[in-house]
Structures are given as C-alpha cells and as structure tokens.
Amino acid sequence: MSETEKRKQYKLNVGKIEEGFVIDHIHPGRAMKIYNDLGLDKLDCSVAIITNAFSMKMGKKDMIKVEMPLREYDLDTIAFLDHRATVDIIKDGEIIERPHLELPKTITNVIKCHNPRCITSIEQELDHVFYLTDPERGTYRCKYCETEWVNQNTRK
Ligand SMILES: [Zn+2]
Image (cartoon, rainbow, N blue to C red; front, side, top):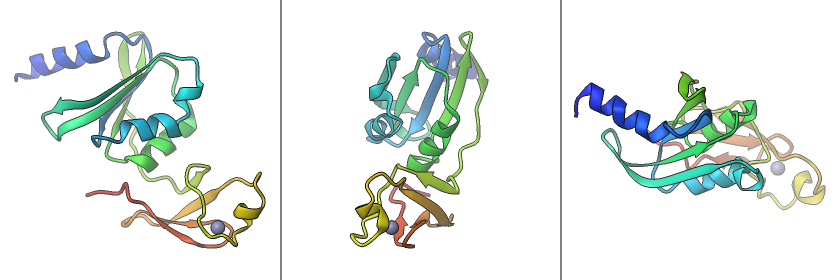
C-alpha cells in the first residue's frame, strides 16, 4: 500500500469524528477493558469500538473512537492499560496532537490492592493509589501497604 493510500484509509477511519480522540494500535482483545476503565460506558458520548482490525504493524489491533474531548487523566489510564497504543486527538476533523504514552508514576482507582489487611480493604471510600516502582517490569506498589502489583499489560 502506498503512503497516499495508507493516509486515505486512515482518513476514512477517523473521518466521522469532528472532535474527540482515537485510541489506535491497541493490543487485540484489550479494547473493552480500556473502554470500561475509562468509564466510557457511563458517558453520554458516541463511542466506536473496533476489534481485530487489520494492522500492517501488528497483524491485528483494536481501536476506540470517542466523540468527546480527552480528559487529562485518560492518558494515564490508557498508558497504564496499553502503553504501546497510540492516541490521536481530533479537532475539526483533523489530528492535532499525538501525545506520547508512558507508564504513569501513580495510578488511582484503576487497580485494587489484593491485600485483605490493607486499609483500602477496610475503608471502602479510600482511593486505591499505586505508584510505579519498576518501569522496566511495570511493577506498581500500593501506597498504603506496599503490596506489589505486576502489570500484566507490559509487553515488549
Ligand atoms: Zn494495599
């Protein structure tokens, strides 16, 4: 496929969005998890989820198109769930930005501490806060009890 054809196909894919963002190159099978963890099911905006789309780079990929401006904290959640994905921010039908995704230093209320004696297991209203301790392995630790959480989503 030529560069022009590729661009044309890409335009076709995002053409419908006037303002919003596209999460592309999602590891196949991970789109629903991202959709749920971003809380997109609770919002009144138009969302398109494409699974197992053809990708020259990856063979297969998932995509999510959202017609709503990206919230700052969404990027951390996306990076946490799949830091190899890409995010295109769309305004007036054009891609205006592709922010760099990296594992967030801290992550709040996305994963839960599994230590039954952790304060978050007792105090239900506490935020579940984890901080990144090993960026190579994607390891996080609970802010309250230091319990380790290994990021299964980290892939080379
Ligand atoms: Zn804990």
